[in-house]
Structures are given as C-alpha cells and as structure tokens.
Image (cartoon, rainbow, N blue to C red; front, side, top):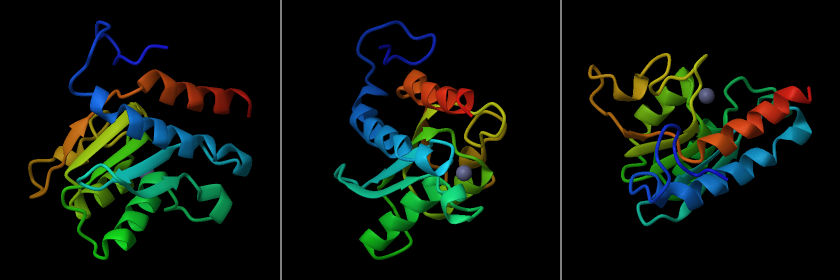
Length: 164
Ligand SMILES: [Zn+2]
C-alpha cells in the first residue's frame, strides 16, 4: 500500500499523515454505497478537536436527490450536531475532490479546511477544473489538502466503474 501522495518520496508526510484516520473513515463511508448503485464517494466532518460530527456517502441514486452528494450530507449532519450553519474550525474529509456544488457548500458552511483523496480531472472544483474553494473573490477560503490516500480513494472508484 502506498500512502504517499503521487510523486512524493516515501516517508513521513507532516501535511497529510494527520488526516489518515479521518480519510479511512471517509473510505468506510464510501464503501457502504455500492449496494444502491451510487458512485462510492464518502465524507466525514471533524470538529475542531478531531471528533467525527458528520458522515455522508453519495446517495443520489438511493434517494433520487441530485444534491445527495457525500459532502453535502456530511455537512448537513455536522451542522445539526453543532446546532448552527457555521462550521468554523471544522474540517471536511472526502475521498474525491469536491464538485462545484459541494465546493460551494464548503465555502458557505465556513469550514476551515477541506481534505480530499483522489483528484477529479473531469469535475473537480478544488484545484482540478475549477478552484472555487480558493477563489480570491470570495471572502472565505478554506485551506485545501490534497492527495490523502489518493490511490485507495481512486481504486474504489475504478473498481466500481469497471464492474458496472
Ligand atoms: Zn459534489
């Protein structure tokens, strides 16, 4: 297993290593999706102390909801847990780079940070195709950490599409 980001030499990674347990939790969420025919993407929201306060997996097919992406569902659950819409100090950890809708939700919820696994060259809005979360025209710009367990996150998607 290769935990390092692509192109990075093996060894401790002080930027990404702290997020490995949370990304494994997001991967567990993602892996629960295939029974519904939903693309396996999972997300968790961490409180400032690292506690998981929101979980979500892609449920678009299961619920017939076009906004039923893992990030949106995790953010909603976290906001319910916190008791308000602002998730200041919190971190969203997701297996796949957020789309434009989810990037917008991340900005609007005032999350401090978004951590993702696999990049999405076709629809990613956190650095690949757009960079909504770090657009300088917005007054809230979360920190972005990319490539955490990227290989495992991407493999889950590759396996899913191969078997369809
Ligand atoms: Zn999305």
